[in-house]
Image (cartoon, rainbow, N blue to C red):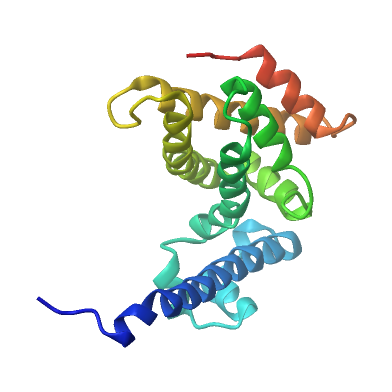
Length: 205
């Protein structure tokens, strides 16, 4: 059995730096795809163009994503992670659905909520492949959020239905509300629209 020496103990710090660089590259590729879509239209955007815009090779792009659709949706991962972090930070005695509402509304604040968020939603509304990728992406994010919900509710994310059900419903409510807000022109603050929608579909354990 290998013993942990000094180099092995220092490895997590190096891993942290590598993970930050990988995350930065993923974000850069996703934002590059969105910029090009705004300039040229989605159909005219190629993987090679996205890679060049982000300053990497097409091979590097393929190391991170299997398609341009995946790259665009993954650029919203920071906001999804922020929802999880915000939920974890809510008071433990707060009712779950209120905590979830606060978490999703907080994720709409700057810098998470920017023109790229709106553009991503508009693209998903008009391109079926992007819409399908968005649903797949949300399923993965809901699984992560379900773990935090299970912790708060004292349930088992693997065996109990409620954590995954609540996470999936919350993400779907957020997406559908946001899409409606974008489609209707966004005359009212989107945070207010999300609060109202979350109240209408509230599910408590």
